[in-house]
Length: 85
Image (cartoon, rainbow, N blue to C red):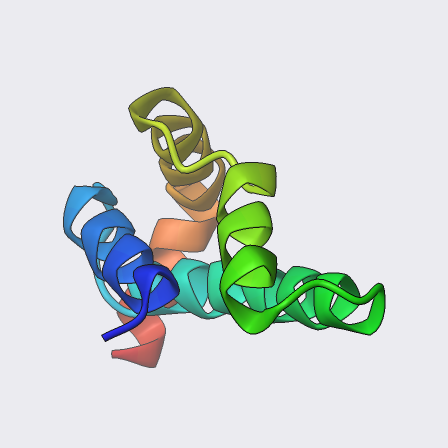
């Protein structure tokens, strides 16, 4: 299993959001990591180095995930999420 998959699984567990907001945020993070990984590979890094650099470039700290949760947990967003479930 790749380090990116492990990091995303860990971030998913630490996100304090209901579904489907949690999955939406995880998809955004995954897309960002994929884009950064591709950029680093295109710049000539090996797959492993590109993966490492992509993970280093994205802040998945508790504080950053709490900030993402706060943004996605606004009252209107919660209301819309309830409607979509």
